[in-house]
Length: 148
Image (cartoon, rainbow, N blue to C red):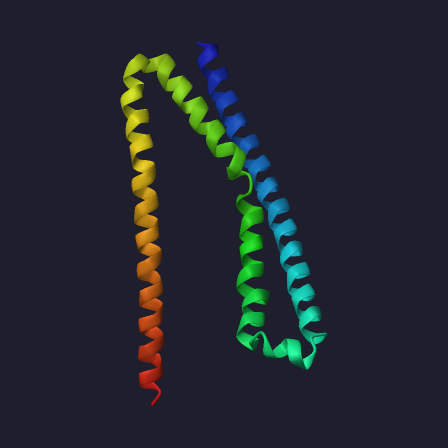
């Protein structure tokens, strides 16, 4: 009887410690990402102030602003999600192993389906990105026509 309570307490403590550790991890990653974003923005701004008139003709204000905002934000998001590069393959491998231990060779059907879905997902993402570019260009044209 006491084993059930002990397992329940251990599960609660494990979940609690995991929550604390993940919170601290994301806090630290957010701080590093914000520092990285700040450094990139200040470096681009400093460089834009030192550009000569001839070099300034090669890039528009919009490109410089894009570097300072969107590209710096991408580095910030990279810092938040960099751990996925190693943790996702590890999680998938452990999950497949545990499923193999529990279900045996029937796991191969699920793994096969997973492998088939990867190229389909890539194709859908490319098509979605292309449609997003078309939608953005159409909204830009409509905005220009509306301001006439």
